[in-house]
Length: 169
Image 1: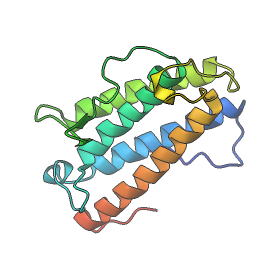
Image 2: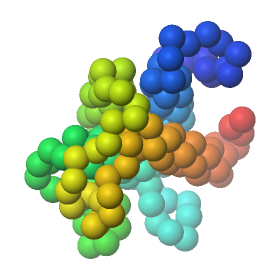
Image 3: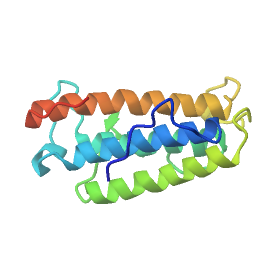
């Protein structure tokens, strides 16, 4: 599923729609890049840090969950760090790209609903996510998510080029 880049000149109803479009673009780009890798590459690493493409997909799902549900909404999400084990990203043997992609897209749908149904100036609920600081506004949280996705999609570009020779944008 290729999503066209949300050009800055494209009309949008409001800033929330702009955030949602960019997040969807980066989310789907990440999933396309992961799906284009040979299966063995999904669970192996080409980098000294050791992360794998499947771990990256799972990580970004949990990043959205931590910032939107646990942080902004102040919900109890059980283990907010469920993408980690032994102080590194982790994917279980039974977890697949299809399953992780479905979870990521479902998390993205939740993020989109929050973004379009809440004033961007609304301040998040107090809680552990903020580590004692005042909660951020929804706009700041969404901006943070955008930079997370943009950075990590760039990381996956490098891994894809190393694994397949195909270059990203």
